[in-house]
Image (cartoon, rainbow, N blue to C red; front, side, top):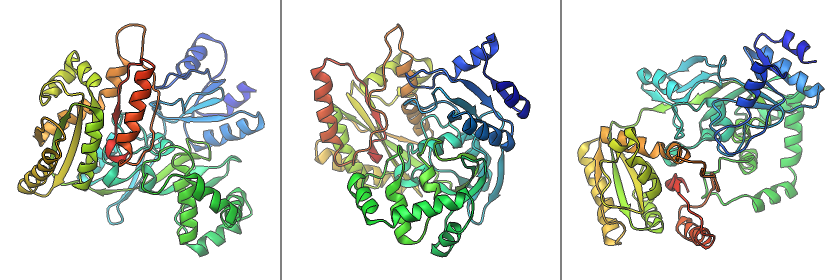
Length: 439
């Protein structure tokens, strides 16, 4: 059956025990996580028709499809025993840019930083940015609902999708975009799988028991950083407001609902050119997280936590040793708090007001302020954290114990304090880094 499938594909397929095929399957048996599982096959589709063939084949043979982009997932999302479908080679086109309406159409294999480099001459950008933004692809960012450094002002990927074109589990194409009540009702009349999806959703969301279960089971609205799981609460809210867009459900679904072939992304103007980082040096992680609450009150653009273990690793790293120029003494943690402003004077005033408030509350022992290109060095150090941890010499390697938790920023100090006590009780060495501002 595999040979027949291969003949129908214009792309690549690896499935047997020959040296090349086995090597390819092994290379896709893991991602950036600690999980490993060899797929039954690896497909590298060249076009939409290849994807349709793979979907039909998987359905007929009771196999799962695992959409995969850069493979930077930390919780094993793109490993499994089914067919891994890698879109990173051929689905890399950047299409129409609409400057007036501020959106761009791209294929799922486009790298986030490459997209923003392309958009820079337009004075526009795509906001969400993971620490792996120089290799993370749009399809993976949608699957994981990526957030990143500036999610507290630019939102997560879910909030920045206009429209998704995709293939459903029967191979049919669907386009999901915002619908009003009339548009939703029209979709329910369709005599195909897309129509069936809308009819079932109408039935579910119209049921008071479903609404009660969603309201009871989901976190409170203040926890806006939730990049895992199905966004049923967003779905219910849209249904009640009469502005319905299934893109919000697809974001965070890890490729389980459809196979994306193209997407329209919402863009925004480039941020103000004046920026600074206040590097809050603290004696404890708890202290840094209390400082994080103050940072949010001062309307920062980003607030990121880096602990002493990551900082120690930067000493022996050739590239990152130069980026730690701002580190004073031996902090247990540094909270990197960024501000944007339209002028240097406004930036200076904003940062000094923040520092004065921290000093009045005795939060931190040093507060160096970095400006301009210095901030790039600091962010590069922060983004290098995971890579530095995963390159520890020797056989003993760190394990991702808690990945992408979602806690209200006001609850973070108490949450992390309890977690630290638990880890110390079990004599476990640990490192913590976080998008603290987003919880």
